[in-house]
Image (tube, rainbow, N blue to C red):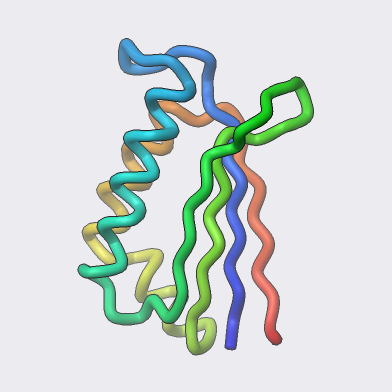
Length: 100
């Protein structure tokens, strides 16, 4: 099993919306992927309830069978649509992938 963690710090404003508004939009978009991408084994998206210079706005926790499944998820057209939005609103991204 492969765990995939992503933390995003968003721009304070982007696409005419605040970071919190974009985090909420992004959570909705990401949550919708569960029904569209079979490779997802577990999926959780959280919006940070605290805010300071060291925090991220949003965290994604997901699980996949293996690296190949993660790759299929990453390249899936529905995921790529979300990635396009992320690239417009993101300031910083951190990723950790590990086996359990």
